[in-house]
Image (cartoon, rainbow, N blue to C red; front, side):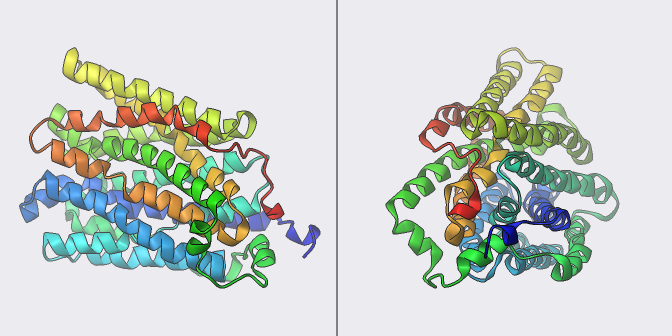
Length: 405
């Protein structure tokens, strides 16, 4: 397969971008809707912050097993069908969550749903279709669609919950179904994957990565860096609606709308950080974004614990999401580190382990059982500090062509 055959049409690039965006935004809905429904669910099932915090974190732990499954499917059988199947998985188990008769049935369904990870597949797909000159920008755009999913979760609570209750909110996960029908017919397979899969060994891709010292080192370092970012994210975002309700006295639907507006900051920042990284590099962009997040955490602590000011405390919650701009680089950076035959597995496993073991929601839930939520949330500031230092241990991959290895 020559270089000419590896060129992609604008239509192919567009539909792959849409598929990646639908997959990642849907992943956001499936994993964040519980954040907005925590208070009414705790009341109905008579459970506390520790139990909900457990589910917050455990559903991400189950993402690790899903990453191994769907990453392997993507590397072995192609990106297209694995992506479609992973989205369907989340649809099925999220809809079932609406009918949970008790808390632990709901918890089990949320954990199983968490296995339907699309992240590694979505970013591997996109990275193999777009040139290195704009890969960071489009990676940032795709990651920003997670915010769309987050907003969709917030809107479902604000609009559906007051009328129909928390169970009806889970039906919002059905929105990708019309797109999946179109994808089965029009979504192209990655020709870079087709080129490198010919004659490839059939051993497990994860085993191949672990058996290679260079790959293993990259896997460990990238996982730890992304783990820091995920820990910071979950300490702040998972509990922001509950924090606003308890600290400032807002109703659940009002808190959801505030968090929705906060999330719009990330919607702008993510593509911007990705765009900038195409020029100044992945490492500098990652560290600079994390620095702003650290400043936001310092301000939140100061105006909540030292010199109380509700308006400025809320303002700091609008600054912290700038630190999450570093998330825009996860997919493109990890995709650029690994060769085609293990790319989907490596990318999926790195992010899913980082996200699955972040336990930020659980830690904050535990701290809240004997103290204020804000003390637990401020642990994210330590993670932001380390995120300013860690990027320099990973290779700079800006401009790397993926069809060369």
